[in-house]
Amino acid sequence: MPGHPGLISWFLTLSTVSMGCAHAAPTDAAPEFPPPFGGLQYLPLLTDARTRSVSAENPTGEKGKGGMAIPNLEEAKPAAGARAADELGQGWKVRPFLRVNAGETATLMDVAGPGVIQHVWLVEGLRRSHVLRFYWDGEETPSIEVPVPDFFAVGHERFAPVNSLAVVVNPQNALNCYWPMPFRKRARVTLTNEGAEDLELLAYQITYAEAPVPGNAAYLHAQWRRAITDDENPYVILDRVQGKGRYVGTFLSWTQLEKGWFGEGEIKFFVDGDREFPTICGTGTEDYFCGSFGFAEPYSTAYAGTTLPSNVDADPPNQWSLYRWHIQDPVCYEQDLRVTIQALGWGADDKYKKLSDNIASVAYWYQMEPHVPFPPLPQVSRRVP
Image (cartoon, rainbow, N blue to C red; front, side, top):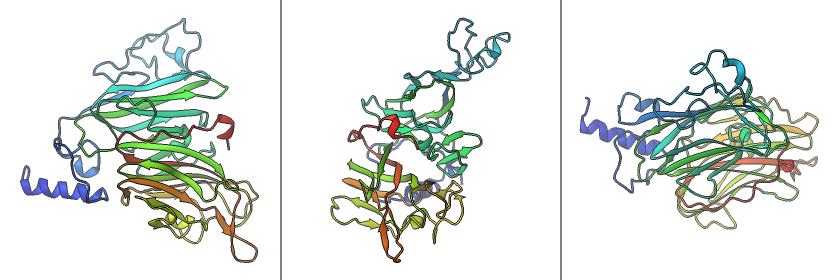
């Protein structure tokens, strides 16, 4: 019945257990239930959260400040379509897009907290020279630093549909992210064009809730890496994470450089002091991505997928885009975390064979701040497929 203490207690228990780590408990006074993280089970339960959204039409997200742009006939380098509303004037789609010239950084969001980012929609050219960076609560180094397409599970700068809970990619290149991103004091999001060509059309919308944030809510982090497995095998997906947190997702943009099955390698999670041997050890690449006996065909599901129409017998280079979201099974750690995967295939003698492949990755995890600064992002020439 509405307002019944037992029902509220049941909802609280359900929400804690469903997050995957039952030991997690609030460290501060709990805000009004439910927390503003979304979810079908919470939709009927009203709170005092206020929905806001930043876009090119409302860059501050303030109440009653959307669609106020006035046509600027003197703008030297307008965004694509900027002159289409010149005769209609204010209020008629005057500034729907941004232009980010080569070498420039656009601030997509800079708002005060507390709050939670609930949805990010973005359209650009699927270039790894365009880099997203998220900064929480005034930090100097970003907690998220990823080339735009890879953050949304698009590898090799090649479009492929993604139909999952955390990320949705729709034709032609509509990028959607639903990872909840709480912040307490400030959220700042930038996009830097590190390429040689101007980005004439950047469309985006970031929807967030102004609301209290639970004391035990951690911050989303995401990090991009790339290596040739001649030099690094096992390939390192994530390293030097310190503190308490949860690992929640992996995206691999894997370039297979010889014919045959490439996915015998095991993923390993070294947690809380593991050194030589991990606590969690998978049984094969396709097993980790919730498949079996190879990747016979593309699939895109709520929690895992292989999205490009690749084939192990195709002439190399053969490109794979693989995602695995640990939404129902986050990897919880108390002190530190390291994640690796082997590049391992079959040799002609029916024995395992180390491979020389080209792998790029995005690791997604939640942790409290401060975080260890990331390794330098490789130069643009070392990011391209």
